Length: 186
Image 1 (cartoon, rainbow, N blue to C red):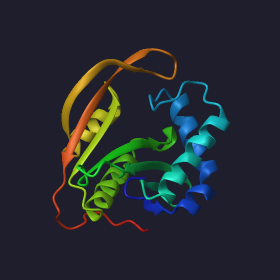
Image 2 (image 1 turned 120 degrees about the vertical axis):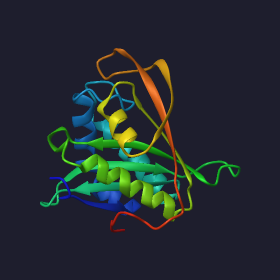
Image 3 (image 1 turned 90 degrees about the horizontal axis):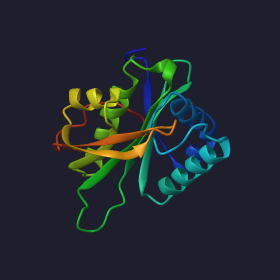
Image 4 (image 1 turned 30 degrees about the vertical axis):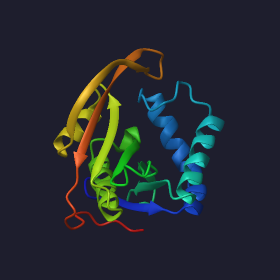
């Protein structure tokens, strides 16, 4: 699937229309052990409420939501850019909820989403990005390969979906104001 995904930005109305596939991705990731703020088993109504709040944030201009679709149009991944920060941080954004279906992993989906969200951030004049991930996760290696700098780790910062304490590793990346590097549709 490498290179065989289309990454695009969703409007608030589109997020509402894509709630079901987004819910499926979130539940799949949590069932697979991803420490993304939810415990297992994740009730469908909780996942729906999460995506509805995300749609509200998109509508208010506080976040951007991107999806990755495979050649069949199936949503296989998503990532968000949180842009609502205090007036002394207009240059900053957080990358959040990078989720890729387990059956679509190791095929370049996450790398495509990460490149696209960085481009969205550049277009929004954001020059400092921050994210966190479970310590020891495959995502750590992805971020390092993409030029993100490890800031540090907070031990026992959260729980895995099965109730085990896990550390959280924080990363940042400074973006140049150069040209957009990845094509995606809005």
